[in-house]
Image (cartoon, rainbow, N blue to C red):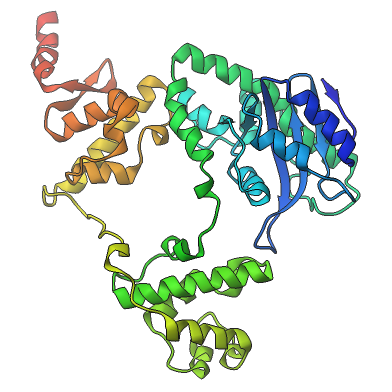
Length: 400
C-alpha cells in the first residue's frame, strides 16, 4: 500500500479524492480536540482504500477541504467505513450539515458476527490481523504543529489496518447472512438528527427533576440558554453550568440574582455578573411546559407484583443464552430496559419486530407467556418449550 506524505494543499487533496472516488470503499478516521471547546476542532483526517492511504492536515494554511467533504457526503458509489465513528460523523455534520453516506461501522458490525460489544480499535486489529497497535500517540495534542512522523504514522495506521479488516468482516457477514440486520443500525448512524443539536431539546438529556410542568418549563428554558451560551463562547456546556446545578435551579429557582451565590456549583461572582443577569431573565420568562411534552412516566415493575423483577431477570438470562448460541452481541438484539418493559406487559417494542423477533423476540414473548422454560442439556443451560419438557425429563429413564 502506498502511504502519501502529509497532504497540506488543496490540489494534492483534490487529486487524492479523485482517485479514491473510484473505490468501492474507503476507510476514514479523524483526530480532533474538544476538551476545551464546544465544537470539536478537526486536526487531522486519515483516509485509505486498498491501494493507498494519506493523512490530511485541515489546519494547513489555505487548504480547502471541499473535495474531501464532497467525497464523504455526496458520492453514493463509495462506501465510507469507520470504526466507532459517531464522533467522526459529528465533525463532518458540523462542517457540512450532512452525514457520510453510504456508511458502515465496523464496531457495530462486530456485534453481528461475534459477542463483542463496543470492541475497541486496538482489540479489533489484534483479533483480525494479529497486530498490536502502538498506543503511544493516542493522547497527543493533535492541534500542535508540526506533527511528528510518529504521530502521522500512528494516525494513518488507523485506516490502513481498517482497510484490511473491513473485507474480512464483510465476508463473514455474507456467510452468516446477517448483513440485513445492520441496515437499520447503519441508517441510524447516518441520521443527521443524531448530531445536530436543537437547544430546545437539550433539556431531555438532563436527568429530570420530577414531572412538574413549571419545573420542566424552567429546565427547558435554562438548558436552551446554556446551550446558546456555550456555543457563543465555544466552550463545553459543563463550563457554563453542570447538569446537576441546572436541574437544582429549575427545581428551586432563586428569587433574586444575589441568591445565585448560594447555589451549589456556582461561584459567588454570579450574584452580580452579566451571565447571572442573563440567567435570571431566562427564569423570569420561563413558562410551564406543554402537557404533551412531559415525558411519559417510566413503568416500574411488572403487573405480576413482586415477581415482575424475576421475570425480567429470566428474560435477561434467555438473552445471554441466545446470544451465546448464535454468537451475536446481546446489545444488538435488545437492551435491559426493553426486557423490563416486556416483563411489564409492553408489546410495542423493537425486539418484537422484524429480524429481532425471529431471532429472539418470539422466544422472549413465549417465556413471558409461560410457553418456554429453561432446561439443562449436556451440562449447558438451554431453553425449551413446555411441551418438550416431559420428553426431556423422561430421557434418563429411557436410558436406564
